[in-house]
Image 1 (spheres, rainbow, N blue to C red):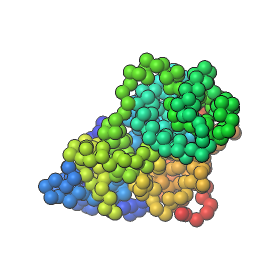
Image 2: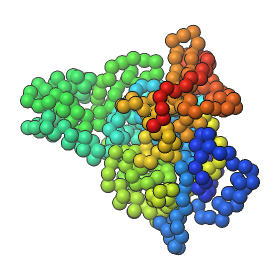
Image 3: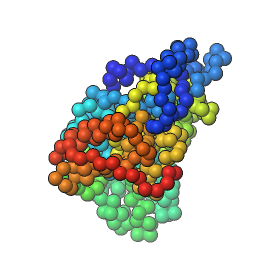
Image 4: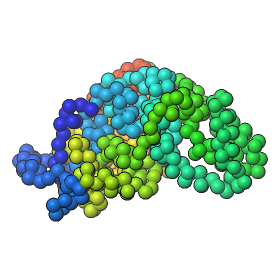
Length: 422
């Protein structure tokens, strides 16, 4: 994280403004800053001293989260440092983690992630929300036990297809199979189905996925490389000694790390992020050490006292995010980055699109075509934009293509999004 991000201080909540919202004059800003200095930066220990918690607007919450997500200013962090700070990156497809890091790190190149993956310092595994994420090897070993209750709940969904199956025996057999050699899910279905011919094959394979810390072996996940999805256990891939030496992540540490990457946030927000329930106790245990705020709907929000909460008027440059970026998936209330009028425009059914942030809010979609002589990045804005805003978009697009496209910087083209908002 940069020194600018670390120096950001807590300020009062400001009226909501989206990407095309009203501008703030110098006099208004000065007045707000003066008012902010008179207010406490949140309330410690849940309203101690009779003070009401400070109310944070969506814009104020958005700026805080963008700072922690390394999206206000490109960070000088290494890839492993960023992966651990962000608690992993969603990786349902191969390329999104690379584009997520390109949006966040000042000098990122695809090989900066491919190298630790090839060297087994970073891995792909189903963790948070039971979806694929890229983590450092250490974080995967720590996070997997923490999210096991969600895995157990997922396993329960397949109970009808597992009638008569001894889950301990299934776990042992599946482990033996994938540690003998990496297996695809189809191979697991076949092998486990032979042991339990009356069970549902897909349920057997999903049970193995829920019971064991399975990871996708390389070359799957490497930039520019092909490879089918083949699975083995984390212990086999990373070494049993390494797995046994790592202490599982506890609930209170998980709360702190979540707030450091996504706060301020509610208990429900964290549950949305990780797929777990029953997190209230950990928040309550930490309450005396946390700041407490409220959003404009009265929802209680928690935060680390030392975490950055920049002025809501802090500039937020254009950012190109991949599909399924955790910025858009890790809060129950996503209005801090997704204006209500646009809340369904970046998804269609189970399909998510690459998104563009303007002034810190979802403002459009983008796609990248590298089939021609030069790359073509097409931007689809939800609303009109000034020439200056378009110039900023083109500059950020050029920066992205220069690092992520083999042919270097190409053309940027603007197009309209079809269909009504919402």
